[in-house]
Length: 246
Length: 290
Ligand SMILES: Nc1ncnc2c1ncn2[C@@H]1O[C@H](COP(=O)(O)OP(=O)(O)OP(=O)(O)O)[C@@H](O)[C@H]1O
Ligand SMILES: [Mg+2]
Image (cartoon, rainbow over all chains, first blue to last red; front, side, top):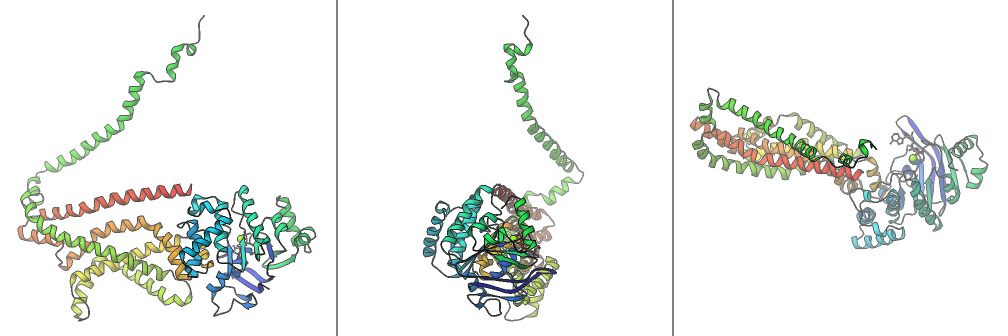
């Protein structure tokens, strides 16, 4: 297994957000996390990238526990890529500098080498002309694709995507989804939180429904979307259908 | 056949203003400026007349605005002011560095850094709590009195140190407000790239934080320029001290006016520049957001 979460608990103050999450993601697998707002999707992804400490349970990457004392957290984060809903590019740097910051500073790669690789990747993701632009000069979709490139340049073993299209104007969603589809086709291991059920059905090998801090139900999309096992899942999907998102 | 008035050819005057009306419009455009000039002249002229016609004016003029004394006092005061400028320059080099160090110490995360954070908090609390003039006296007279060989005994050195320590405490808080204004998500993004806490601060957070607070920092510079004069109480012969010496020798206060003009000569352009920069910065930001 690439990534495993075992009985992961996480609270913010009194608010218990993750209440025993069990999840295993195989190499080259694409897993979608769905669930109502506030069910802990973002928290799960942040914890998996060690951006937030967990209270109990353990997380393993390639079978090695990464949530115990003495683990080189920076080293682990380099092996995992994460992209956030609001892109979070650094506004004071060009796209190119955003993308090369990780390799240059965390890995000590020479500027020339890093930039050459960055330009190649930016070109592949349709951003060749925007390498020297500042984030506030390009569209939301371009920002998000740049953020994906920034996460990919370190050759992560797994990519975590947190509602990467939620902040985008509707006409820009497609370009970002197609990038993710390409990554999936290329064999990238991915865990993505999403509200785009149609896309989840398309791209996911497995869909997990989160409820009250647990994975309530997990199944292949065709199964989970057509005959969910749990009442809660069915209710959630009914509401999604009502909102016109499935 | 009678046509309605608005169909007749000369009705077009509605579109281009009648010549008379045009002149009236122009005059209307000039009016505010005229009013401003006149009211300014009346106001300041009146105030000046009030002063000049007051019964004591001739004596005051002799004591504060005497051309001869002006000429006599100017060289020494100017010499002293040169020292003010040097101290101003030194403190402008030192304060940003010390302040940034304190601000960074204070924004380190994690239990391991608790003592460092505590140290930074104690420093800012105490140094901001002491009136600058007291700190100048304490360090300027106190430390040399200890007669520790390793420490410099120059009053100028300790005056500068007092100035730096006090202003660094305020400036550190300015930096910290800038650091706090950078969204938490920026830190997460930097850490997610595998950067260490320090690298995240250095490359992602601080550049944005400093940019946030440049106007506030520049306002500090304006007040720093004036507060350099406080070290005159240590007997250091900077501009104010020189002016004082002249006054006690001649019983004429024109030397203070000389010193005042010298400070204004620096602080007014500085203030204008800060205002201009702040406005430009504000515009740039509102445009970047649009
Ligand atoms: N840093 C934090 N401090 C306190 N509470 C938090 C923090 N982060 C998240 N929470 C709370 O934890 C709960 C789960 O948040 P999370 O962002 O993981 O949900 P989500 O499933 O991603 O929701 P959404 O679909 O709206 O993104 C929410 O109730 C939220 O208010
Ligand atoms: Mg979320």
